Every structure is written in structure tokens, then in C-alpha cells.
Image (cartoon, rainbow, N blue to C red; front, side):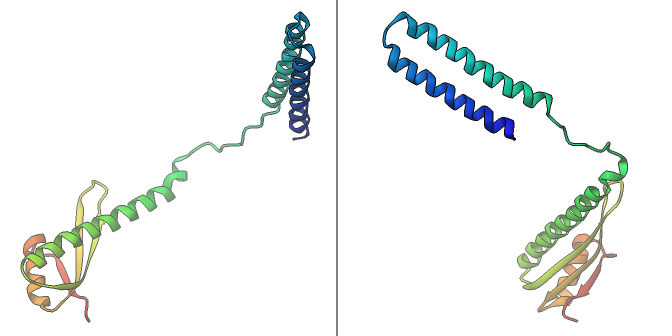
Length: 153
């Protein structure tokens, strides 16, 4: 860090010297030659800082990946997929019930996703004014084996 601060100070000093030299030299031949020398000094100081930084660059230690390192991310992804799938199915069921004239307060769908990607709707929890009619409509949509539970109790 100290090298970087001193290099920045050096660049500022050289820049100031270039500006002073332009003002003093005016339009003479000396101006062009002196400016060239100062620009070379500036380029050399910047190159020194960059090369020193490149030589002292420390890369972070990145552990090698194994299959176990991704298990937490896979669990989060699977949980989110199950949650989103359940919400989507609940919204479709809410639309079907609404089209049938059945108002629902709550529809919660419990979903399981198997390793082969198939979706199993294990249970639907509903709260409605007419739970029996809602349950019958849900079973006709999802299958008679679908467990429909009264969410009011």
C-alpha cells in the first residue's frame, strides 16, 4: 500500500513538472525534448508500479470443488422449485374454483418432485365456504387419489 501511495505521489509530481515545463519553455525546441523526457519518466514510474503490483499479486486460495460442495446449493434449489411449483398449482386451482363460483380463502398445495423430474401432488389444503364442492373439483382436476384437507380445522 505504501508503494502505491508513493507511486501516486510520484505521478503527481511528474505531472506538475510537465505543466511547469510547458509554461517555462513556451514554443522552443527545448519544450518538446523536455516534455518527452518527463513523459518517459512518467511512463517508467507507472510501469514500475504496475510491474511491482503484478509481482506481488496474491491470488486467493480457492478450494478444489467436490461433489459435496454443491449439496447445499442443490437443496436450496430443490426447495425453491418445490415451493414455486406448489404456488403455481395453487394459483391454477384458485382460478378453476373461481370459475366454478367457489370463493377460497386459502389454497396450499404440497408437492414432491422425484429424481426423474415427475411431480407428485401429495396434498391440497383449502379453506372455502363450500369445502366439499371445492374438494370435489380439485379431485376431478388432479385425480381422485389426491388428498384434499379442510384448512379451517
